[in-house]
Length: 383
Ligand SMILES: NC(=O)c1ccc[n+]([C@@H]2O[C@H](COP(=O)([O-])OP(=O)(O)OC[C@H]3O[C@@H](n4cnc5c(N)ncnc54)[C@H](OP(=O)(O)O)[C@@H]3O)[C@@H](O)[C@H]2O)c1
Image (cartoon, rainbow, N blue to C red; front, side):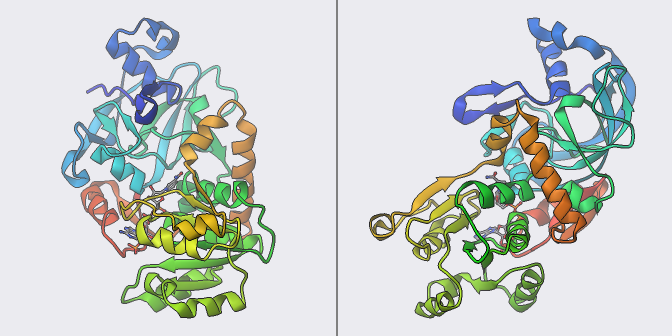
């Protein structure tokens, strides 16, 4: 079977984002008889090679609609690389894409997965920026990383040092980048300042804790209650959390005592929405910002009138996919961020989130587990 690689439609702009994943688009355009296909037809023939991939042909419950299949690989064109995928996480956005509820959706059938690390095993004759052995990650969303091999344009990927831990590399391109940007781009945070966040045990949350700690920033972390709260709290404190608080505790008056020893936060990071977000807002300092990056509770954000009038809080949003798109013409910003994050990894200041490594054949269980509450471990497909 020849699988057309993704075109991803950005629903809110109602345009097809054809700019990324060149290899995917090449084949899609050929399928559609698009006149522009010749511009991309350097590897028009079907290759004899195949790979395994987690494929979905319709939207729905991930463990029901995703299947492990053999798909053909195209031949490697002059500006392409053949990569061997090494590891790829299952993130909430991957789940939402399969469910058909995410802001960008690939054409179907599609290979699941947006993030992961791969090793270059073959380079086309005109490839300049990559060599065999390099570790690479996708530059953008929509690559379809849950597969054993892929033929990609050299411009679709960016290198990472191959002496960092594999799981750190596999989970670097989305969550730590999101954490890095949110801690850098919204408030001028100095050592001693405070940040508050919910979903603190999430992949994003664990990266926020570690990057904030490396910058000397106090980080107040809110998590849902659970039987193993103490273990979770200890684990988050071990990676740099200043305080770990249950959602319910955040609503109690005694929480004011916390701000006797720690300044009120300049920045709140909201991955949950609903009441949890409202509570974060209540604790911001005058003029502070709340940045919403996720909506795990599927509840809207309600902003108290008093927070707007008496504290003049700023209510913002962040999407790392948009940031990457906005910076796609100038690769230096992404490169600089990855270099800084990799330096933190090498110094032992940034580690991968707690992960459960899963064989590709166990994908169905992994997809179900990734959707369960209170798991506190990222499912990572070992490819
Ligand atoms: N905007 C962006 O650029 C961007 C980038 C990366 C991620 N995200 C989003 O950020 C969120 C977290 O992603 P991730 O990969 O870090 O997640 P993750 O590692 O899979 O963790 C999921 C987190 O969500 C929490 N959660 C799930 N359902 C919840 C609910 N109903 N109420 C409160 N908390 C709930 C979990 O807490 P429990 O342990 O209590 O279940 C856990 O902390 C997702 O919404 C994702 O799409 C956005």
